[in-house]
Amino acid sequence: MAGIHITDIEAAINWWREQFPVADDLSLAPEVAALAEVYALMVYYHEPLCDEDSMPAAAKEAWLAWYDTTPDTPCIAICSTSQGDNLCKGCGRTFDEVQRWPQMTPGEKRATWRRITIESSAWRFNRYAERAAEGIVPKPDLSAPLAESV
Image 1 (tube, rainbow, N blue to C red):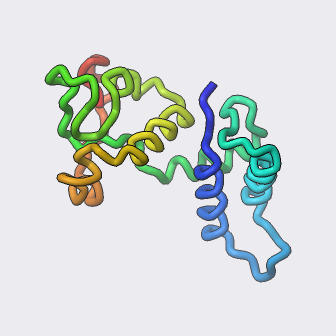
Image 2 (cartoon, rainbow, N blue to C red; image 1 turned 120 degrees about the vertical axis):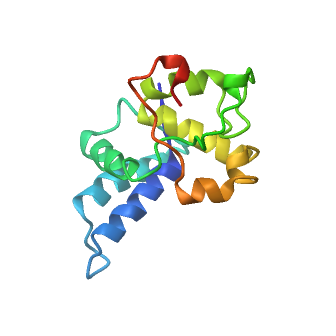
């Protein structure tokens, strides 16, 4: 089960609110309403994660639309896992995460992003932060053999 963290639900709500601002405080765009219902239940039940597979269809569709606006990979094209490291110095992903990235679900990818952001020890967050911010990261070649993908 891949869990979508409550902070991602909140980010998606805020993104949708920017896309469709309302004139009054009583109206909600359908996407915001769908995500707000999930968010409210998570808050009520003190749940930090929402199951990606059992999320209501409208909320999942709205979340995936927001997800598509986020960077796909944390890679900054400095991969130390190819040199034998179990944890990449460039992006902070484990060797397994780097290898499985193309097959991971959006929820699994966001969980990885959350972990590496919290740890904040990868070069993408310090030495090469400007490189990550500028988007110099190449898109992964999905036709390449699995061992070479980012």
